[in-house]
Image (cartoon, rainbow over all chains, first blue to last red; front, side, top):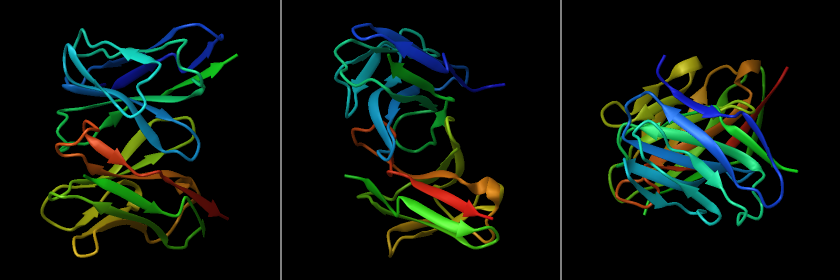
Length: 114
Length: 115
């Protein structure tokens, strides 16, 4: 089945650690996205990529980094510079990134700082 | 720039009652509009979308939405609520040429269904 796979589903991070969230898609989509979700705040865009080897910052990129070395993969690293990383993280993809197609979402990763 | 406003962060209805979730948008170009549903601890699932053509759009699970250009609205409705409809619903508009990469999402409306 085609879709987006995020792993792990739950992740615990100690203070000062970097962690990487995985996102893989087999939909052959060009564009991929990372969103952060906090209660009552909707979805906030962290980074997006419209093509391999290219990505742009979203509204809340500070403390996060991404790479897009392969079309199907868009990992997100939460660095120690992110002061409040506890949240639900959603990865998404779309056929293209010019606003004309729907986004498909993964099941999310819940990150908790311990 | 495009934007989306969802009126009411929380809506509560009785089982069997009409569901109406409101969405207003702002767009400088003809918009593409979407409704998504999210169940707890899960990703978002597309309910329906409007691109061009018929302004009344039917989606999954008995939901439908009507694009009203004069009112810049895209409200989501379902004639009879079911307990399984309890979830959070997000309206989105295409970010054509903007900085969001693809879609701009509203803040969401949490729907509760009372037995």
